[in-house]
Length: 372
Image 1 (cartoon, rainbow, N blue to C red):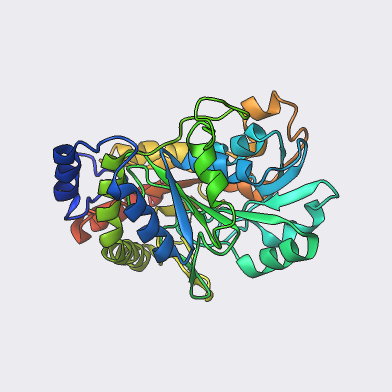
Image 2 (image 1 turned 45 degrees about the vertical axis):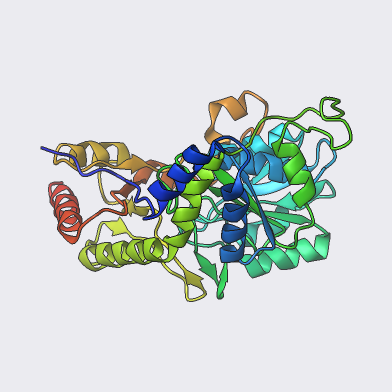
């Protein structure tokens, strides 16, 4: 039986044309017209002033935190329920990640828990827009204004998602995006930092490029890394931005179709869309009800036997062995994160999914959940 893939990409119509132009012109590396055009187009789409393209979403997070120039030991508040590169970006900057649990419905950062984690050492907040649904940003921005904190959004999973009519990634000071192959728009590997007002752009470009100084290229006064994107990748990225509205429309259709077919399934919690949000359903996640006598790993195995590929939810930062070994999050517990990490997975969510395939997935889900 052929498995339905989890999240296959869809490449923009002009990708081949733009890539051919790169090859023919010889501008295939980290210089060329497509880099600037891609940066400008994506920043404009998000509502930001400028963009700085890099070679991954991880790199975007690292230079975004580094650009804030926080003192060593500064604290950055982020959700436990996220991917590990959020925490490692904070650690790489010599800072300390401080965790809060996630909301049980949106699976995003629990904004009501943030105020209690603010200390005299807190310098920034990192909201993560999970699986296409935005964080409730107004309370976070109010806290940031009150305490003089920077806000770095991780919008890697939420291209085009909206909070009260504003696209995520340009609400905070800096917004970080991933353009990995499974994202709504892709460059294969790639990422970008969007600067809401352009304040940090010069430093972001400096950090992206091994900290080469403008006055003497090979004289370094800071340790930097090569996080540059190529003109080839940017060419693909520009073609993707041109198609982003249709990609988002397809994702929202996918979310709606799944919702219609699974809404009567009593043993699943489905993605939500708050009245202040536009969810782009990057991944269609589901969480098993507590009455189901098995957890997500077994659920995935039973679906795989029926030809349905799935992926597990994140493991909380407070349960990551590599972070515990560093002395972080000792004895900390975040019940919502722990529950959805064990009982959640996401179903096939790719841009090439057909209505027939979604129907096959839903029938398999219903059959598995009728068997216990």
